[in-house]
Image (tube, rainbow, N blue to C red; front, side, top):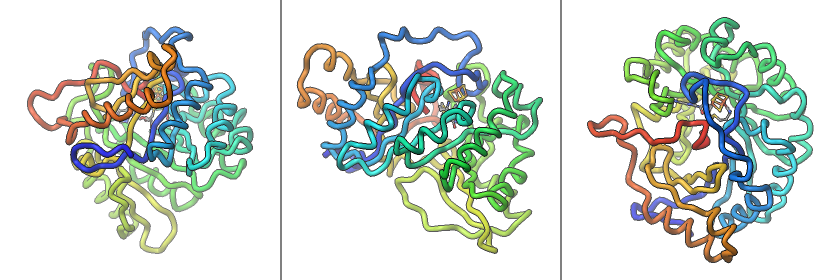
Length: 325
Ligand code: SAM
Ligand code: SF4
């Protein structure tokens, strides 16, 4: 089992399948970016092998992410392979939604259990400002396609940035009342390319909840401490929302996740500065035990928590798109 020095057991693995993306969200990546060479990316066979070992070590759930996971060709084939691994309880995906009109049904057939769709605004001009692409219509069509394919409930993730989109918080919350969506508000984290984040742009989760409660009364739902989102439902029982307070109320003490980057590095924290090279083992003829040893090393070195709110915080070199959000 993968238990760290602080007694936390890893149960979830986030797998980035590509660092490429058809969007250029200002909080995630620069416009002008050099992507990894294709040979650097783990193949589907390699990802499946690493996941099998991870499941043996106690990983129960995986989430595919990126970059944009649907920008990786035939990613539904990977979903199919992972969904067939005995002992793995769930395979889900976080996506910008753009390719869902073409892919949602195939993903469902392949055995994908859950979908998170990122959407930060319902205003086309703002969408262009935030993602640097004019694709709001396509993303909304993607959301409809995912609902039509039978994914339910779908989680909609909104990164809240003061002065950019925070005046839409109430509107987004009300979406959870009218459609089978769980709307989740994420505090803006310092994982952009260095030019945008500052703490004045972070809207604290507490403020988000107060604002929503002022338009429709809320009550808290039971909280699984290993889940990043604190959950609330509207008092009349229609709809659920979540807030992810990574900056103002870090949940590191209960963290149960590890990450695998698209180029085969294990990371024990989004904000970690070290990486553990599983690709070198895979491509150097290593055994499953050697792969397991890389996981064990990553977990042994996991720190107590991130230091965003402390002097001396050092941003990781990779931005979100290259880590896998
Ligand atoms: N391309 C996919 C998408 O956008 O959903 C998956 C990858 S993206 C890096 C995963 C999630 O990270 C998205 O919900 C995105 O909004 C979020 N994210 C990216 N940069 C962030 C930041 N600096 N702070 C908070 N969330 C961020
Ligand atoms: Fe692409 Fe997702 Fe990053 Fe936006 S948040 S640039 S959609 S990887």
